[in-house]
Image (tube, rainbow, N blue to C red; front, side, top):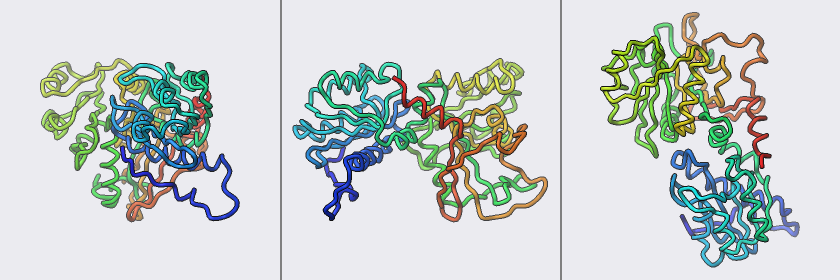
Length: 396
C-alpha cells in the first residue's frame, strides 16, 4: 500500500470558518471508499473495504483489502502508519471483523495499535460480525460511530450484502440498444450497436465478475467467447442456460475451456449423452429439476453456495425476460446509442411476459447516467431492493 499520502482537497479551506466535524468525517470516509474500490474484482467473495487513519487532522496511514485471502484494509492501513497509528481515528468503509478467517480479527489489531476512535460507514451483515466488531472495540475503550457515508458504502457493497443476506449472487443485466430500443436488426445483426469505448468498459466489467451468463439462443446465434480482452483481475466462469441441450460441442465456448471455465445449466429434458459429451470436453454440467422461474432460482442458489458474488447477464431477450419476470435482476447497465434501427421485427432487449402496468416493473427514480464515448450508460438498481439493502444496514 502506498505511503505517499495526500490531503483531500476538500480539507484545504482558506476561511475563518472550518467545516463541521461531520463534514470532515465524510471527506475522510469518501477517501476510504475510493481506496475500497481498488479491490474490485480481486477480493470477492469478501467485501471491498478501505481504511484511512487520521491523527490531529493529518493523514498518517491508509490501506485497502487488495486481494482475497490477504490482509484486510485495516491491517494495511496500520502497517502504512506504523507508530503514528497510536491515538489516530480509523475511518473504515465496513465494520471491522472480529473473527478468525483467512486472516486474524481486525478488531484486535486496532486495539493493539492504540487507535482512539473507529468510524465505520456501516455495520457488517455477516452473522459472525453484525455489530459485534464495534461492540468489542467499544468495550476496549475505543470510541465508535457507524453510519458515516452509509449509502455510498452500501453502493459498493451490494454484491457482498446480497450474497450474505440472500445467499445468491448480485445479478446485473447488461445490454446495448438504439434510441428506439433495438438490440439487433431484423436480420439479427448486432455488431456493433455500441461504440468502442462502451465495449472496452464491458470487458473491464467482465474482469470484475465471478460469472457471465447467456442463453443458448445467444450462444448459437453469436458463437461468443465471453472472455475478457485483455485478461483482467479474474477469469469469470461462463454460464449458458440450455434447458433442452442445444449447445454445439464445437462452439467457441467449449473450444476455449482452457482459457475460462464453462458451466452449462440444463434440465432433465436434455439428453444424457449430450451432457456426457460436454463434461468430457471439460465443461461442468448442472442439471436442475425446476421449471420456469424455479429453474433460475435453483441456479442462483447453486451459484450462491459456490460463493459466486456477482453475475453479469449478457442476453438474450428470453433470458432477460425470464429474469425480469421473476424479479431476479438486481441491477441494470444499459448503453443507449444515438442511432435508430427501426423495423417491427427488429429485436428488443427484454422479452418474457412483461409488466401489466407501467409502474409494476423496473422503476428507479434516481439512476446514474454517464456519457461513454458517443453512448449514454444508465446504471440502476431495483427500487424495492434499495429498501431491502437499507434495512440490512441496521442489523446487529
